Image (cartoon, rainbow, N blue to C red):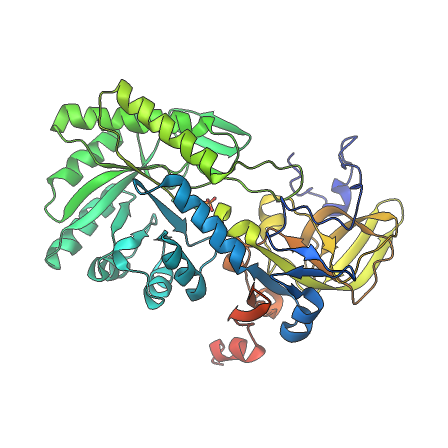
Length: 463
Ligand SMILES: *Cc1c(COP(=O)(O)O)cnc(C)c1O
């Protein structure tokens, strides 16, 4: 449901359709395993624990707000993707969802490859020891300097995103005496979001080269001619937070039709096809994501079937899940500050972070869940809105949620499924410092990205 900002301000947008709120959950203390990281549970005192460490100890030791990441869960999800696709396919974790050196090492150990889309992400990946040949470099506007660094490092593939870039990468590779492995990113006219997709001839967005009008075929023609490039395949990424596989079906059909025309025109069978990322996760108990093995089976079947129909050898498949690997593995731990009941509307619960650590609610109308985690409670449910501390009325973390009516300042609450696109999109709005990422495993907690300090802010501000 779209609940975009009301022009007269958020207070006036509260005329919501009948039945908008789901009923309060039967048990406010329950921590739905669909939404929370695998090792999250409550101890005998009702305090939530993760990786065997209780959240009160985490708050004391590391402060709030903090992103708390379940390392065992991260590794298990990474491994599940790797295992599901098997040795004849590649899984590239999309680093933009969340990247740190610890995460790069976990990915390396679990056998995943890595997508980066900027010089900063490339530096992080290389500095943590990810072999360059397992890195793919993305982006619609890579600088010449970034391309040069990627080629010099020897990245496994650069995903070409425009006609200019085809020439640019070829030129840089050649001047470095190299032949760079590349894929061409095409837009197939499929836009997929959650439970629906739209298939059109054209896509009105900045990424990729349109399949429409023969442009993608022309891009292949040019790439095949250039000595600096080794064209290994075609790339397509159709959207985000997708639950329904039918968008991939249309996309694969269109990519394979391009592969067939490339074979017919050039006598070349491109050996790889990348279907991108975008697989959905559960942010609330209403979401029902698919398991990696179901996704792998579905995608492999789709590509195999399309290639058989086109009498092509089935190419090696790669996928690029970001959110589906890291999203569910972390929650954001906040301390409750002020509580403001607005009669007849809802209760505003302010936390010590907000849109600087989670912009997704303000930016995309994203839905989240929330729970009281420093204790359990038998109080009645209260309709709440969790808001941050920023000077902005759109600073909402969880738009509609039920929390126990005895909630009090000093309680700890946590928002699950914040592993993806929260720390990586965090800002310093209002000069609020960015929270740390704390990894927890087997009863031990350690900082993997430290909290930003006010000295950090002043260091950049050179006066
Ligand atoms: C963003 C992105 C992904 C990852 O998307 P998720 O929704 O996190 O799975 C993968 N590939 C490309 C090209 C992307 O831009």
